[in-house]
Length: 153
Image 1 (tube, helix red, strand yellow):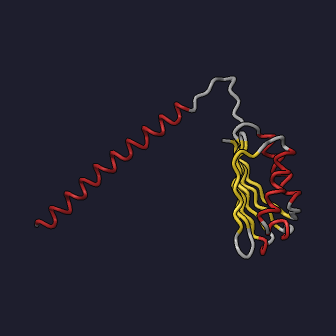
Image 2 (cartoon, one colour):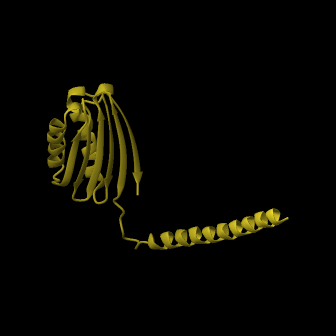
Image 3 (cartoon, one colour):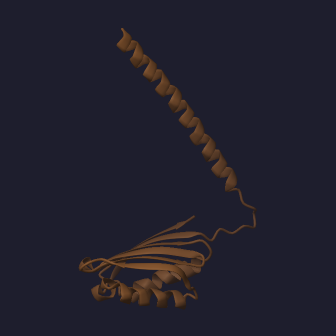
């Protein structure tokens, strides 16, 4: 009997906890929606692009130093200066990069052995520059195929 009573108590307490969680979630949702209310003339320029490149030039993807030069060139063409950047060289090949520029951030990972790269770019000021950078990266890495997912945020 004690065991059964204890189980019922736990079930009731779990139900109460679940009710509280639901209330918190709905409260957060309401607050989020209220914080997103913008003036009519406010223009949202945020853009999130996920770009997968295939059939790339494997030599362009293999070394961090070469990749850094190519990325810097692309940013300069878009009239952006990298504020924070890091390029990590994997052994024997492959690179992961994180780059932050004014109004833009992106990560890049390369798989030279598969001739592919994955880019996750987020722009919060200029959609045109974001798409321009993606187009230039496709060209720089000589991508034969690509898949691009674009989401307005």
